[in-house]
Length: 483
Image (cartoon, rainbow, N blue to C red):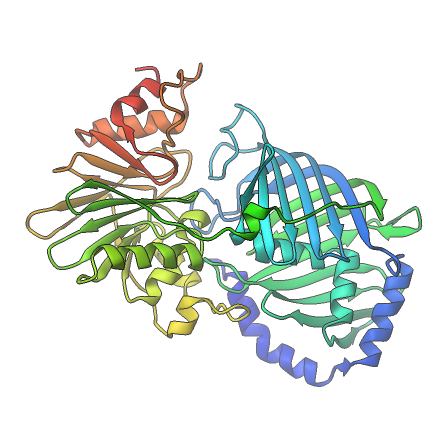
């Protein structure tokens, strides 16, 4: 199996410390940085907007664990960075460039996705139309993107006690933005930032290496900026774009909406059967199942804060029993971002057989930049897996975990079936739309595959507990595919 980039970084750390001992601090590094700031026209640069197109990849949404991130066509992409206010706005239009893998993009050939993401300080949010949707999970990544731009990395290094070392004609300037990322900027003799190697925290991968390459610098009204940007993250490509437009010192107008300032993780509880609770209240749901002497939680999503809120609610609902198992529907990062949190409590993680070796590898990665619950606990994660189908029972209640076969969304894709209660728990294969909405002209392939698997397993489903959206009758799924 390919050595994960975060692990490779950890193995290189002792050598880097040795190099750092021979490096120059303070004025030597600052002189290089000030020269680069002047050469790139960044001294009086308050804001910068760059735009272009190319290709991108959906980070964390690989079809199979360990595969490259799914490729996208990046029809248009722009990023406005506000260095004075530590703010950023990113707008993109994307379509799928390959049929398999996850993410919120419409399926291959069925349309495009338009996104707007923003950051100011330590608050991140997305726009859905005119509605601001808090996006706390995106803060680290957007802070990293802001301060690893060619001019941003110079400004961040100047205020963070950078270290300088030389490699031939290149100056390598290293620093840490506390709690957010570590970075090394590779600066040419003429003061251009050619490369940034960085490490940022991630809820699934832990310390995650990123490499950003800048080339083809041109003068845009006195500011030098690259016309090509390539970036890898976690060992695979995430961006390759041609920059066609650069504007400087535009007003950014990025202000944190009131609903983002006041946002907290909220868990809404709905009892759906004796000993079964639907835990909603956010973008991702979980399901708590009570057994005779323990609890089973289906899905610990997103990141520490969401997972901790869900785990706390579970303890409140059934305080006398421990969560023994946490079932992960699939390896995509939004659905597995709380597994470290769950492992910190001592719960055993239940993954697919396909995903288990990959999870064992990445969960062993440190999260040293911003230590998470697992790092603070000192525990080693306990994992078990499902190959095809597995039943958990206490002699009365059965919880059957089965693979969703032939999905274009993911391999090792699991659903959970409670036969006595006739409840099906699934993620991403079916997200219910508004009640009584007409079915689409072309049935969604993921929904068709889900029905085929329900019928293959001879499941008599009454209600579906989706891990996105509202509880739905099974009949709604059949209507959605035209049956």
